[in-house]
Image 1 (cartoon, one colour):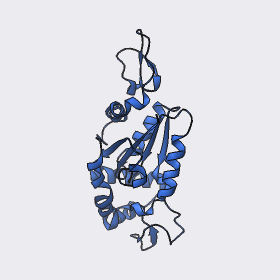
Image 2: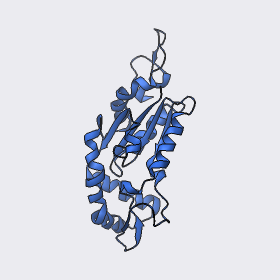
Image 3: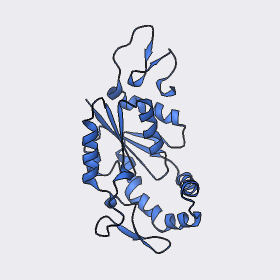
Image 4: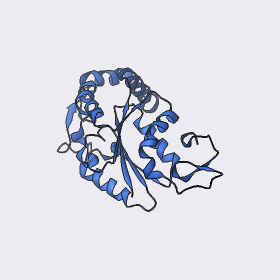
Length: 213
């Protein structure tokens, strides 16, 4: 039976890295749902939660769960659960452990915990490298609303997790921590005695952990 894994954590904690690593390990068996894809339209002032940015523009509050289209999220998860061959649906995002539409469907809950200073540094670097954004704007937005939103809407969901993963660990180490939790969902058929079978049925040599493939 297909199961749902919810992965939450703060901005730049490593939750997307973990989710995508699981998908790459089991591309035929794992479906991803990124909550970032389900914000309400940023051009519709009648939907979502709005705030004023550090540069004094009215903007959709990306750090508030009220800006997520929960109906669309629920439909996306349910559609992924029905896809042939899918054994695990990974839902990742800031609010994966707090949105009712996700929590009701989640069989397993993981929180990626990363110190605030590291998350902020990662976010600023990403903004500079990808968007060419002035880091001063990122810092002002963080001080104005981002820090408080994390404390109010993301950090408390850590208590709901079945497993807390260190977001400063390597990708392989994060996978190694999570795979025992979700193993039953991806367990392959019994293997021949001469070979070991990894998660998703990948054949591996004895002594080589599945997460290292």
